[in-house]
Length: 304
Image 1 (tube, helix red, strand yellow):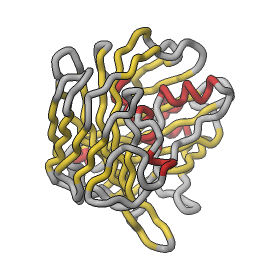
Image 2 (cartoon, helix red, strand yellow; image 1 turned 90 degrees about the vertical axis):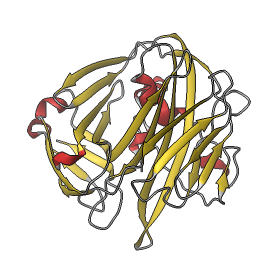
Image 3 (cartoon, helix red, strand yellow; image 1 turned 90 degrees about the horizontal axis):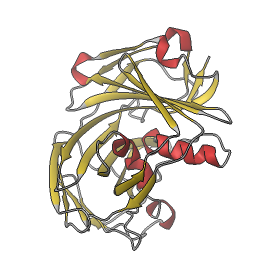
Image 4 (cartoon, helix red, strand yellow; image 1 turned 180 degrees about the horizontal axis):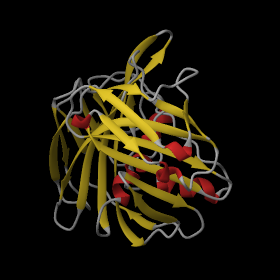
């Protein structure tokens, strides 16, 4: 599971149809040396709209002409072993009317969101032409669809080892051509909190969370949590310096969270912003923080 594939926008959409928040699975498919976003391979995951992955970066951007390109390289445990997986895509849009479903506040290192009643953002999709992701273990080309959206591309292997220079190039269309580069995040291993039952996490809301990790990487550590009721969804995105090796999330970050089951996702990410004329675009690369067996730390969280 990769909760990075959830966002305030997808939560709002889920609530609008009366369902509870569910983290989106990051399915993997095998690929060749070059992969295109045309629905090849496993048609189901490849045809998924990449906007849900990119929406968090879209939400954080100023202005009304915004975009995001993302690359995720994770690992998962299967048949007693650990294997890699990746997901990449993009999203570009002109915002016509703003989102009024989300209330945002900050508590310590955490950005908290409550999603409920209101009007979702009215956005007009835009195309930046073909996207070319290079510098990892394979080159990935992602072509826009006829509606100017991008299908997410997936694969059953890791996309980088850590420390490589990743570059994205856009051929340009509605969004002018651009390129951006960053350093791929490296492996980070969690010390505490400990998970149970194959990856579940229990959180006492009033006590908050203390986490420790080992490993060196560019970027920042992100500890993400969410939970939902029938009428509202609550998220906490908490960000820390990788070099610190430790993080403290105060109990106040979970003050609005109801008791019950939600999800969590711990990862390290690096990002860079480029500004082609009239646009604000963020390129992000992220990898899951792993446990002692090398499995990605993301799954069910129980809030008490």
